[in-house]
Every structure is written in C-alpha cells, then in structure tokens.
Amino acid sequence: MFKKLSIVAAGVVASLCFIGSANAAESWRAWNIHNDGHPNTAAMDRFSELVDEATKGEVKVEVFHGGVLGSQPDALEQVRLGAIEIGNFNLGPIGPMVKEANLVSLPFIFKSVPHMFRVLEGEAGETIAAAMAEAGVKPLAWVDAGARSFYTQKPINTPADVEGLKIRVMNNDLYTSMISAMGGNPSPMAFSEVQQALKTGVVDGAENNFPSFKNVGHYEVTTHYSLSEHLIIPECICVNTAKFDALSPELQAAVRGAAEEAAVYQRELWAVQSDQARKDVEAAGIKVNEIADKGPFQEAMVKVYDDYLAANPDMAKLVEMAQSTE
Ligand code: BDP
Image: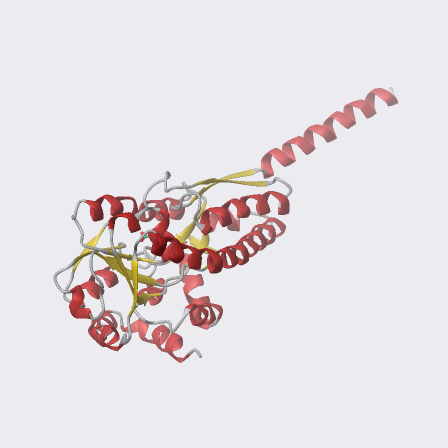
C-alpha cells in the first residue's frame, strides 16, 4: 500500500514538474535585418545562446536574420503588438512611434559614438528607454551602429554637392527634412530595396555606416563614400514590454543580463568589423573621402532643428540634456 502510494505520489510530483516547466517555457522569435558577416548577426546569435544558458532553457530565442520577418517599421509594429517578441532595432524608425527616441535622429546631435553612449547612460537615456517601454518596445541594452555617411556616384564635400540628388533615407520625417535642407530629394525606402534602387538609378545615393554599406552590397553599386558622419544612431535589443514583464523577476534578470552581455560582444565586434568593412570596400574600389569642414553641413541643419523644436517644443529639454552632456 505504502509502496503504491509513493509511486503515485512520485508520478504526481513528476507530472507537476513537467507542467511547471511546460508552462514556464517561452519561445520567442527575434527579428534581425542583417545577414551573416554583419556584427549584429553574430551578436544576436550569441544573445540567443546566452538566454538559453541563463534561463536554463526556460526562454528560447530563435533569431530570424536578413529581415525575413518583415521590414523594420513593420517588425517594430509587430513587436509592439507582441506578434514578434524581440529584435535588434535601430532607433531611427522608432522615432515616428516614440517621440523621445527621435532625439537620436537629430543630425549632429552627438559629438561621437562614446558621447552618444554617455547620453544614453544618463537621464536622457532613461527618459528615452521609459518612453519606449511605455510604447511596448522595451530596450534591454544599447548597441553600436557607428556613424552614417553619404554614398553616391561622386564625392560629397559640401551640402551643395547633395543638391538635386535623390537620396534614400530610413522612414522618419527628420531624415527627409535633413536631405531637403541640403537641397536634395529625400526618398524613404525599406533597406531591402536600396541596392536595386541604387543600381537602377532610382536613387542617386544613400547613407549608412560601413558594415551595412558593405554587408548588403551597396558598395557594389556606388563609387564614393563621403565621411559626413551626419547621424550617429544607436540600436537596441528591444523586447515586447508585456512579454518581458510577464516573466518572473529571476527570468527578467537572466534575459536582461544576456542582452547586456550580447551588447558588450556586439560593441567589440563592431569596433573591429567596421574598420575591416572600410578596408574591404576600399579594396573593392570605393573612394572614401574625408570632409575637411563639416561646419556647412551643421549650419544647414539649423533649420531642421528650428522647425523640429517649433513643432515639438517638449523635446527642447532632451536636446539640451544631450548637448550639455560632456
Ligand atoms: C542599418 C541598420 C538597420 C537599418 C538600416 C537602414 O542597422 O537597422 O534598417 O541601416 O538603413 O545600419 O535601413
């Protein structure tokens, strides 16, 4: 009798354990726009492994590379709704849905990449992160995306060189204003369409960092990369807020820790691979030109700031915070 009962009890305990872990197991899809060979692809794969280890398999992250889950604006909407759980996102396309995130899309707002990280680590960063979480896209860690510069079929040395050129930009009104302020014609377009558009002359140029310029072959269909470095836009590992908040505190800490560690790894990879990407495109024939004086580009942006702050006076405080950060 006793033996029988204990067998039954063991069975109950075993099935309870089973139910317990079955309930706890979370299976997440992660969006990544980049392909193999891009630092963020390696970092997202590492993130998935780290989450698995840190949560002992209770949270599984399957990463879909190459933007196969959709364009960035669509994927962001999916993360907000919880249809995709997590991803590596650029803050540029987040600006139209989270006003505070638009701080980083003001041209020349940051003096350098380290300055950008100092701003994000301070009060301005906390404000942006809180607003993003409120909108459903919670940043767990910030990652590096270097600086964006123009690439076209001729060197760009002054804003006048952009005049009359059709330039592809990411979806954000600040970028269309930026190109218009230089006399160019902005063309918002999904990243996946840019190579073809450059090749067929639908656009005359685009702007991005070296790893993205190289990874999707934009360097194969342009000739000059001009170091305007007009935008320094951070990226995040961002999760659907409700999914994250529904995890136990222990699992939240484990997932956040994994994101932070993956971000450290991403920044290390970025430092090495963005230099390498520059060398690779130069070896393939791209002429990289330094812009001796970026002053005229910055002066052309005064109107962009004035118009933006006139329409969004509540953003003045964040702009002030960023500009006063050493
Ligand atoms: C890359 C970003 C990616 C953007 C892409 C773009 O990492 O998130 O979608 O630029 O220009 O540098 O659309």
